[in-house]
Length: 335
Image (cartoon, rainbow, N blue to C red; front, side, top):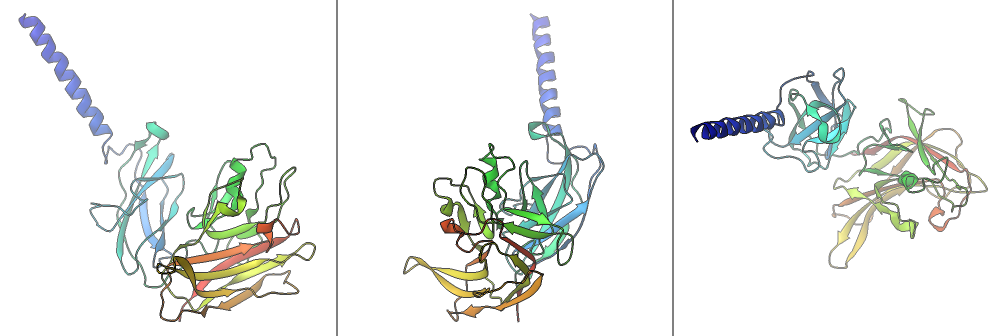
C-alpha cells in the first residue's frame, strides 16, 4: 500500500512539474531563444496615428506589437494588444487620441498559428501624439501583400475593392482595380486606380477611399463603408494626380468632413475640398491644392471621407474601361 502511495506522489510531482514548465514556456516573457528586436523612434507622428518601426532579427518568422497608454502596459490600445504583424519591420498604429503619450514594444516569434514561440520584448518607445492630424500612409509608400492582391496599408484606414478578388477566385487575372506603381512623384510608390471589365462580369471602377470595404456582390454599391473617425479641421487638401480617361470619362477626387446630426438622424457635411468638373485632365503629374469650404462654422467634424475614383459614375456601372487615375503624396494642411 505504501509503495502504491509513493508511486502516486511521484506521478503527481511529474504532472505538476510538467504543467509549471509548460506555463513558463507560454508566458509573456519567455527565454530569449532567437534574440530581440531594437525598437526605433516613431515617425509620421500625428493626432491619431504614428508609424512604429524596429530593427529586424535574423531568422524571425514575424513580429508582435503592444501599444499602451501606460509604460507598464497595464492596458492596451484597442486592436494593439499582442497584435501579430508578420515579417515586417514597421506598422501603422492608429485609433489614438491627440496630445497623448503612448508606449510601444515589439518581440519576435518563430513558427505559425498555434505553434508560435515568442522571444523577449524590445526596449520601450514613448510617442507623444500631436494636436493636428494626417492619415497614415498618405504618401502611399506602404502596401500590404495578400495572396491575390495588394492594398495600401493600413486596412481600416484605406479601402479598395481589391478584396473582391478573394471571392472571385474563378477570374484570372484577379479583378484588381488599385495597385502600387513606381510611376511616382516622390518616394518609391504611388497609387494607380483603374476601371476594369473582368470577363463575364460587370464593370468595376477603381476606388481608393478612407473606410472599410466588405464585398457585397448582391449590392456592390453597399460594399464600401465610407469614412474614418476624424476631429481635426484642416484648411486644405493637397497632393499630386494625373488622369488618363477613356471615352470621355471623368474621375472623382475629393475630401469631405462630416458630423452625425443626432437630432435630424442624418450626417451633415461640415466641409468639402475637391476636384471641380473639368473638360480636360492633366496627363502628367500635377499638384492640386483644394481649400476646404466650411459650411457649418463652429462645428467640429467626427468623420473624414476621402474618395479617389477612376470613373465618376462607376457606382452606376458607367465609365471608360481602362480609365486610370494616379495619386501620390496626399496631405492635409493646417493654418
